[in-house]
Length: 170
Image (cartoon, rainbow, N blue to C red):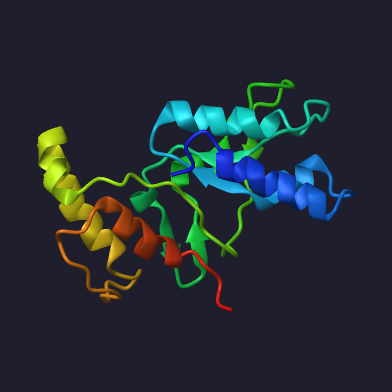
């Protein structure tokens, strides 16, 4: 859950500070964000893109997906099929192939910190959703259980477990 991209912008600034010779496009290639909601995903895209408006290839890697639908296989991260080709509505480009990393060095996010007791009050369908994410988060790509967490835990707990699936070893 990248929200408006505050963590991503800070990471961008840190990378630029550490190596002033890095080009805007090179930094953007190393940063990926995801949010389930369209508006924060757009804000993240804008907040990263405005770091340098003078470049032609200004494509921040922000996905608008449910984090729990993102998969990690034995070979690493798998970009969802519908997202593999992005439509670029600028510069007259019809579409561009999206290259993506297989593993990540770190996963940083701001998941919803909602107590599980409050979830059904927000919306009844959330109870079913939570049951689904528990299953997705606590199992690896082969269906083997990788963690045991109390069902009373909030959604953020499952974000942490699911996020570890995308980390490279070491």
